[in-house]
Length: 177
View 1: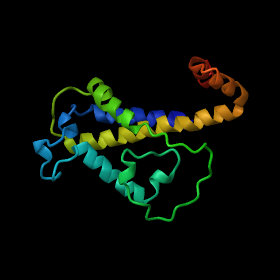
View 2: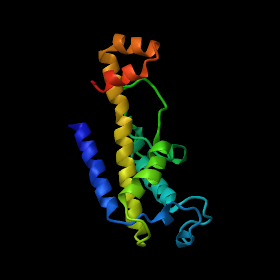
View 3: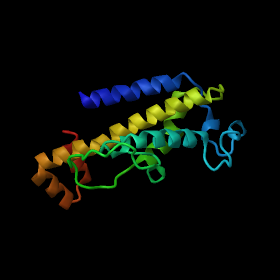
View 4: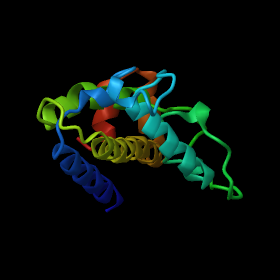
């Protein structure tokens, strides 16, 4: 049910984003529409909004949860709230595929989802982009929990496939195919 809720959140976020045109200006460096907001323009409007959003959320410990990953992890402040110890359910890792998620979102999802052109709704479209990106990121990174759980329940099978470098076998076992 958690995975279904995460997927429904993604679908809803994409439906919300689809009501706006592509608004490519939000992902262009030094676009004239944002020069008053971004001085000097070293990042896009989406970069700016996403970073500021993540900075605020970092202060209340969002990115201390193991299933949350920031798009700008090195630029975030320490949490203002005391950090609660999290139980370690995963092997320690530094897997963060948000760069790939964002690249795919901008190059493939938005062009397929939104009508071309510009409607000037930069703030609204960008907030929808942030909601969609964060929902997709959470769902993708939650996959680490699923994979770890499956590995722990079938360690011998996975170990044999890993040692044999059988990636298709691993995928078949992971996806219950």
